Length: 294
Image (cartoon, rainbow, N blue to C red; front, side, top):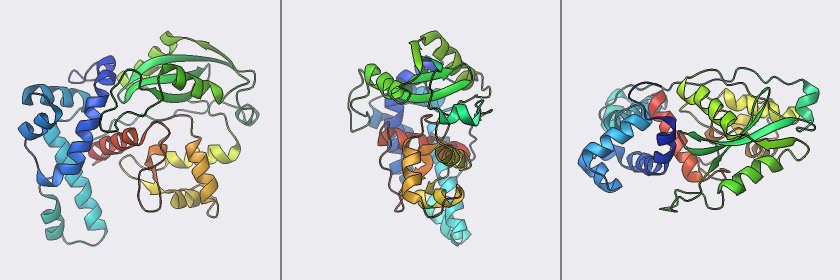
C-alpha cells in the first residue's frame, strides 16, 4: 500500500460512496464535469472528495476520467475509427495502471477439488476489501471463497445489494460447503486481506468444484483486467463452445469474487446482470479496472 492509499478498513467503509462516484464518472466522463460538479453530486466539498477518491482509487478523479477516455479511444481505434474520430469522441486521455494481484496456485489434488470440501477444516471471517466488507472462507491451502457484506448500509440508488448482511453472507458461503468443518476466525481473514490488498502478495486459492467448473474459472482468469467477454466467448475459451448456458452457470457458481473475475463476464448484449453480490458492485469493479488498466 502506498502512502496515498487509505488504510484497508477506511477503503471498505468508503466503498458505498465511491461506488456512487464511479457510476457518476462513468456516466458523465464525456462531458468532463469539473471537480466542483462531481463533488457536489456526491454531497462533499471538492477538497474532501478529491482526497477521499484519490486515496481510495489510487488515482485522482481527473486521472480516472482521462483513463476511461483512453480506454474508450483504444476501443474505437480497434473498431476502425480514425484517430480524429477517436479524439473527437473522447477528448483528453491519460494512463493508469492496475496493481494486479494474481493467483499463486490451487493447492488441491483433483480428488480434493471434486470433493466439495468434504472433511475440510475451514475458517470463516469478516475483513475489509476495497469493495466493502468481505466474507472470507479460508482453508490451510488458501482462499476458498470471498463474498461481500452490506449490513447497515443505506440502499441508495440501488447501490447496495439487499439481503446480504453478515449472517446472510456467511450462510451463503458456508452453505456451499455443507460437509466441511467451519469455525469463525476474523483474525485469519484480516491477515489474508492485508496480505493481498495492502502488501500485494500472491494469493493462494483452493478451488473446490467439478473439473468443468474449475476449467471455466481458470478461463475467467485469462480475461485481462479492464476487459470483458460474453458467456459465449468464455465458453469457447474454456473449450466448451456449445455449452454457453452451462458455462454461465459455472460463472455464477464462482466462489471467489474479484480475484477470479466473474464480474468480467457479460450477457451477449453487453448487459450487466445477475451478479451474485449486486450489479452495482459489478459495475464498480469493471469501472475501477477499466480506468486503472488503460
